[in-house]
Length: 300
Image (cartoon, rainbow, N blue to C red; front, side):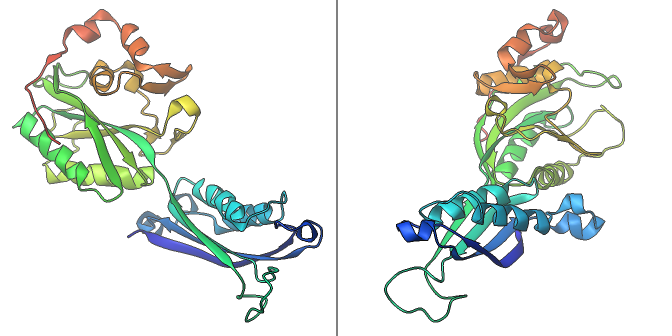
């Protein structure tokens, strides 16, 4: 269960309703909002960037309540849910809209907490692309274990996994060849929460971060979160995470297995959203020559 941030009792006078007089005479509407987030990082670093500005959420909700007239409080709830889901840290939201002065033909207990209400819950369902690699020990066994560990992450649903491909190491010291694969999943998790889960799985399989681009028992990279074709992909840069992955567009060991699991996929680059098959075609021949089929596997 995620942590929660609540904003209760946001009040606005506005003209919403099905009846004609409701569109002319303002009445009271009350919004309650509960945000589901992972607040462990904010609790540790005391940084606003790791959590959600409840002032921004409250002002966004108030703007919806006082904005264009609508017939249904269901519509208000849906619009406020969209506002509340916009911050990167928010994983899910529950919105309750109350209409205490509703003309229902019956008395309600009071004009603040009484009357009809609607509650909706919405959560993110973003596509995520995760690249896997290993070049130490039982490479295929470790990667299969990693995929199974991904399936156990709450808030992450693994959809498909590419075949294993074997590739030579790129950059860094001389080292054994890699097995590589790409997993496509769907997730409601904030990207840094998902990154924490990837690092946890790496540690559980003996990953030690000592030599950059050095040999490793397991490497899990978050490549893209969201869909670049409709501009819903997340784009930001922090000290520990850049989305989309800044070097994925030039890495055959990411693009080729990704194309095997999703031939229509696109990746955002400096030029915009690009078809990964076209990105592969644009790679130098030397980058593709070293890619060969790996052992058969069925980790799901």
